[in-house]
Length: 127
Image (cartoon, rainbow, N blue to C red):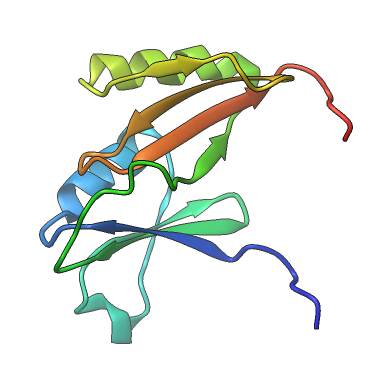
C-alpha cells in the first residue's frame, strides 16, 4: 500500500460557523469555497480549496479549539507580510516565530481559536 498524498484537512468549529468561515478562510486568506456534495450539506460547515488539496471546516457539537495541532499554509515570501497585515487589521492575533530554519512564519487563530500557521520559504533547505 502506498499513500498518494494529502486530500484534505478538517478543522472543527461550532454550529453556525459558516459566515465566519467564509470571511476568515475565504475573504482574509483568499481560499476559494468549494460546493459540498449534496448528501453532506445538511451537516453544515464549509469547504475550501488549498491548491490541489482541500480544507474542510466541520461542525463539532462538543467543539474545543485545537491549540497545538494545526494546518500550515505555505505562501510566497512576497505575500507573507501582506497577509499578516491583513489579518492584524481584521483583528486577528499574529505571532511571529523565527525558529524554523529556511522559513519565515507566523501563527494566528481562526475565529474559534484553532491554531493556524502561515509560512514562506526563505531558502532551500535539504535534509
